[in-house]
Image: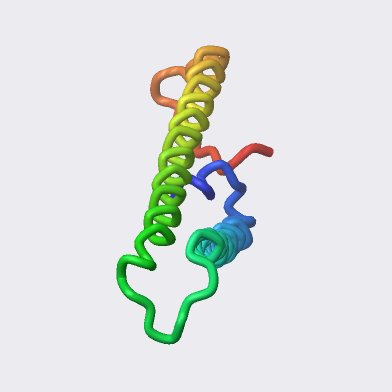
Length: 109
């Protein structure tokens, strides 16, 4: 998992728990926001509303969800490219180990 690759081995459990918690809370907040957009668009409904009355709310909620998904994809690509550039710069700055030496690196100390 990309979120825990830069964490020291002793802290991977904590990082994994934080990632899972953030995903759960984020999905809950997203559902609440989309429901609020739907309700704001549709307003007060009778007990058995017609389908045509619900369409504007669904359109607003799904368009906003698509916008946030696109925004998330763009931000993810920008962050990944930035991290790859940093990794390439640090690899170029580190001298290569002589042939025959085998070192294992566990995080940054």
